[in-house]
Length: 199
Image (cartoon, rainbow, N blue to C red):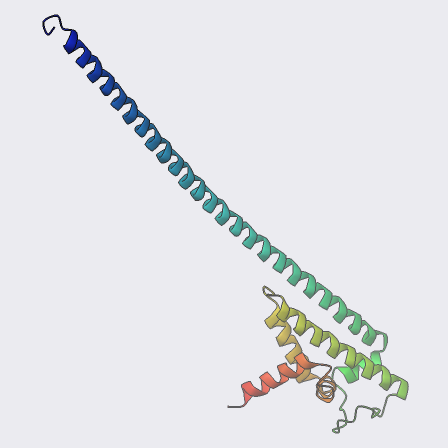
């Protein structure tokens, strides 16, 4: 039988079928490994793209927030200027009050808020006190608003303006000191000024 090759052929057939099965199994394992590697590569690529996209979104959000804060700061400052001009217009209507408001007329030394300046009628004095209270309101509200807006570039300028007004106008200073509950931001400003001057 060995001569005719029947048995070796069967062995060869068995060997070749085993070899074919091994190749098929190896190819299947290779395909699975390639599929797993491709899936891993796709997953990593998706994760990297997601991170890049998230970073881009965060950058845009940061820019948008900065723009909104700047817009809010500008709107708040514009509103403050309108309120300030409205109060100043009241002084233009009554030119005699402007002299007292600006500090050009010497005020009595006592802090009595109901004392009538000698050259003003009681009605003019009441108007002057009301204008002074309104002016203090605008300054106080301005300080409070500017501190709430993170990107308000004008906060230092507004503080400087308020300090100058309180330093130059004794009526504004007396109004603020006589009503600390109504003007807490102005009181803080005065106290910080005192702390700066005291060693």
